Length: 409
Image 1: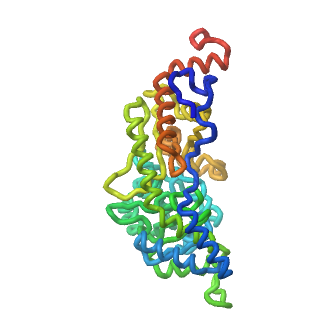
Image 2: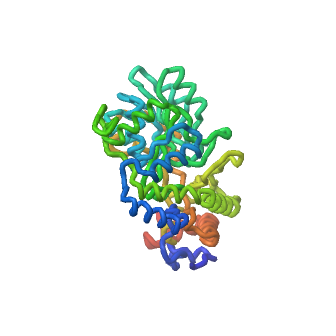
Image 3: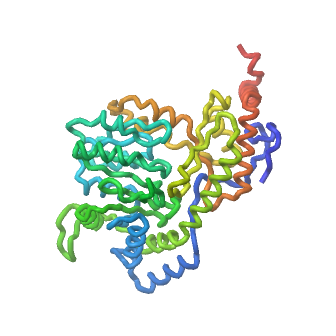
């Protein structure tokens, strides 16, 4: 690692990159490798690799216990989990969803011929704005799909009230939110169903996977049937289904990951606290906060960059970091309503808060692959860049155009 002391040390100005290899926003948590290998050897010995095996059943039981619901149906990935929950809830026509989310949330609707109606977000929480949700409801609306962005729960109470008054199903994309709580109650049991992702970079992973959590017995039964081609018995197909089953090896990874979940979260929390302390007084750079009275997985370290105060835009700071090997990311830029096929549909209303937040957030590396000394260096780079922002921009302008910025008319 190369420590940055002076502005001219920055790689974007020709210095040596701080990191010899890329520092990713998130790399997979592995857990106890030996425990995983024991499980893999066991499932190979039993020759039960798929089709609702013992490890899948155990994982579902452990997840149900963790989040406090009657049913947690494991499937092959989070997008399939969303699609199954949407279909099981009998959504159709138009469903209200935030634009500030990973595009899979919208695609899970569009793939089934359902039109996502994009709602704006609250600029402070980054979650869907209940007031805008209610304003968008019309006679074609068949449901609401909220997203717990960064693992911080939506306003589940306000959304629940709206859904009840309008007699609409309420689902939540909880891809970020395993291990998080609202008023002491774990995410997983809100609305009609919640959907988790166990993608490789999530706090708990199954290599790739997802689950539908619900207290609705009938909805859970429909999801279970649909994930297995619609079978309701050995040779009886009662509905249309797909192959959404989770494999035994994926479930083995999930169980191993769950066993180390507290350790993963503790490391995430440590990293978050280090960033918070070292960036607290950097002008125009605000670290997104968490309510410490609730449970969180602290999976995301997100900055909001106020370019007017920092004299450096979000994208300029991102370029500085990437030159150093710090692969900071823009989430969820530019918003689903600016992506295809939604951009070309011409149906999205202006989303002022979504556009503003998407233009200023930057996610930083964290997780078990990130060391405290890595965070020290990332914060040192940010402090150097912001502290010398005007000089930095002038030098970059000169390097690009061959003349000092002030001399060009």
